[in-house]
Length: 109
Length: 115
Image (cartoon, rainbow over all chains, first blue to last red; front, side, top):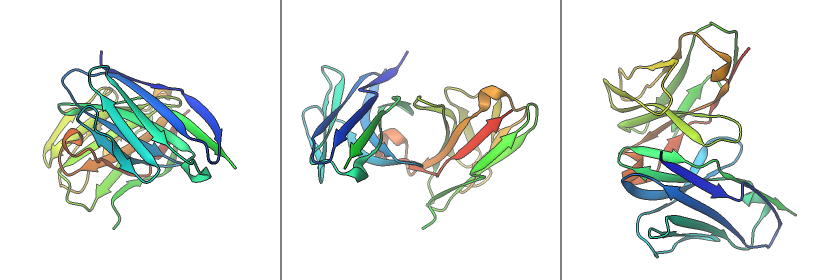
């Protein structure tokens, strides 16, 4: 059965800290790995990764995929209180998306 | 732009009642999806549609029905509500498949409680 496992499930840090969120996947006919940020309402898209070893960056957020180890990480540097959210990792195969349970990040002032 | 709009935002149902969650998008997206999110769990796909007149089951379709008569609208029907259907429901759309574009656009969610 396809699955996406995220760790840790929750994390509390202080502003300015750097955090790394982990995602491992087992997805049949894997095509891509996606990251979403979910605050109080709908998830919003962050990154899509399809190739190993190529880092994607957006401001203080970056992500990389390792297709050999079936693993991805999401890094957030210099965290801010506005980064507090649930971060969802999603494995994509042909016509299907498998969501992880998410990592709940809380950033304290 | 309105994006993906879901209604209602909140609803309480009694066991055995029926209801329809409405979803409409104004981005001319071909693909639309319904997900449910249970507490502490990831999103699970209920039904999806690749275009008007075409729908298909996702991972957890039992107890639900959908229709796609227009590109814009993708309502989700619960015929006989059960407590197990208590969840937050998200409608989403994408221009192509979620795998190819990466970007699903989500509605704000509908919190349904069945008592």
